[in-house]
Length: 78
Image (tube, rainbow, N blue to C red; front, side, top):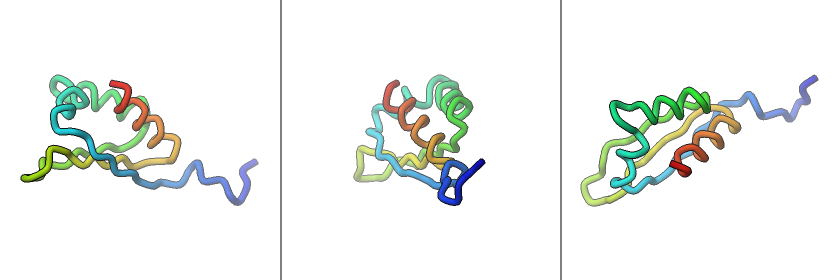
């Protein structure tokens, strides 16, 4: 039975800044790693284009809090 305060099914999003030189290793060859992270976590992951003056890329992770936490863990552990 779920309580009124249960937030496990609510969808939210989280933004990360990832150094540009690490984006390739997160995406993987032909997107294999990022697709695996999406499948395992159940989160949607969008990688923004490179900003002109920045060495970081915006990564937006959307999904349930559990999916977002798992995706963040998988991204930062690779």
